[in-house]
Image 1 (tube, rainbow, N blue to C red):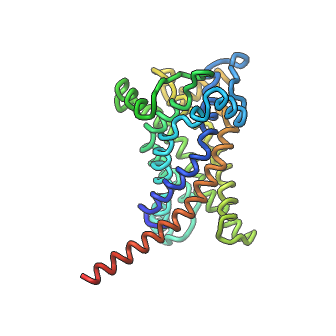
Image 2 (tube, rainbow, N blue to C red):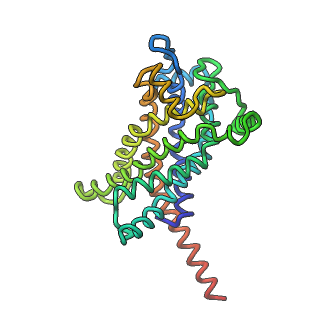
Image 3 (tube, helix red, strand yellow):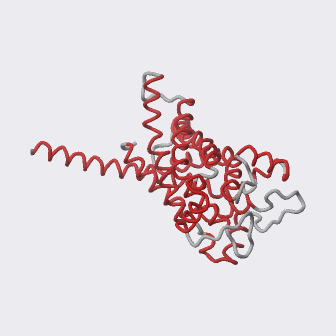
Length: 312
């Protein structure tokens, strides 16, 4: 890894590249999570039936612009989330390993999961207002509305309206669910990635390079989706609500399961999988490449700085 600052920048750049490709499936996922909200079985609409069907319905009715609603917010959120997640994970892991195991290079699953969760929670807390605006922008549809509809012209208008109506507290509505969701996902994303990478190198003899990065990322993305989807559904509903439909994370979870059944918390799981697999593959694979670039830039910058100090 490069320095903490370098890894933060590298992680943010990698995540922005990934989100550009996967944003349409995120829009479908959010709408599927919200359709039929708190409606009993048999009375729920099915406007969006899966990742490909959802994309085709939105593009047909709202155009390409509709499928990319909230992309600006998604960029800012990804820079903050993955910048923290990829930038702070390794320094935290090395520090704890040195403190607990007296060896900064030694791997420990518990330490790895804790550091993954902690770095992700930091990013989720920082980026929560942008994810809130993104969710509301993506859920809005003038043709096939689902859930509460919010008419925002753009991200800035959305954030301004929320702040004027509810203050700072409104901007951080649902942050608890966001931190739980991201803590779950982050606790397994990087540990699973590095675990798969080490096993593939050891047992299959794979060498450092793009094929290894792709295989490790695929394993990580699948595990992340399975672990993270239930709190992701709860977060989407808390972010999109008006007033106090839900009092908090557990109230939302209880009402959703009681009214719609247990599997309601897995609504939209296939669009989520269609998004998270390529997103994780692109983020972690691009992060490897951007980290190398940042290391080269840092080495060049630091060597020039050393030379200028010596000349003085």
